[in-house]
Length: 182
Image 1 (cartoon, rainbow, N blue to C red):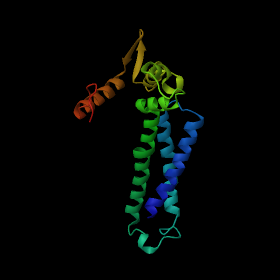
Image 2 (cartoon, one colour; image 1 turned 45 degrees about the vertical axis):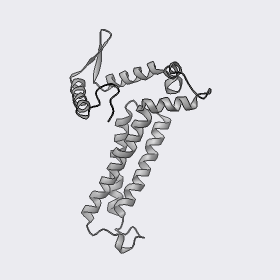
Image 3 (cartoon, rainbow, N blue to C red; image 1 turned 90 degrees about the vertical axis):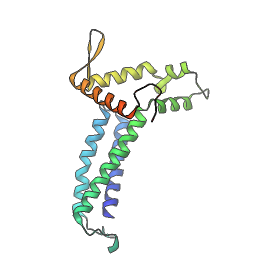
Image 4 (cartoon, rainbow, N blue to C red; image 1 turned 180 degrees about the vertical axis):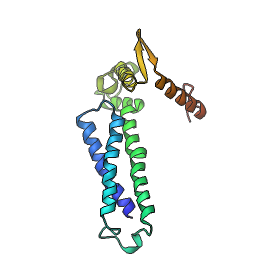
C-alpha cells in the first residue's frame, strides 16, 4: 500500500508544480519542461520511500508488502504511469487539442454559437487559426525539426526521421487518410 500512497502524494505535488508553472509562465518547450519536473520529483519519491517505514505509521500488517524491491519498483511504475499516462496526456489534450480548443471557443462565445469562419478567426481565445499554425511551425523550428529556407519550411535530418516514423505509424494504424478513424 506504501507503493500506492507515496506515488499518489508525489504525483499530486507534481500536478501542483506543473499547474503553477503553466499557469503563470508559459515555457518555450512545455512537454520538455514537464518531463524535467517529473525527473526532479522522482528523487523525492525515492527519498520518501527510503525514509518512511513500510507501514507508514498507520497501515495494518496485511497492507505491508512482503518484498521491498518489488514494492519500490511498483511505486516508481505508478509515479511514471501517472505522469506519462495522465499528466502529460492531459497537457497534450488541453494545449494541443485542436478540436477541444474549438469546443471551448464555441462554449465561451457570447452569441452561444459560431460560424465556421468565426471558429477560424477566433480560435485560441481570439488568436485565430493562423496564429495556431504559426505557433506550431515555430515549435517545429525551435525543436530543430525544420528550418526556413527561401520562404519554405524544410525538414532537418532529425525532422525527416521523425516524419518517416510517424508516417509509418499512421499508415500502420490506418489513420493516414483524411477522415480516417480508428
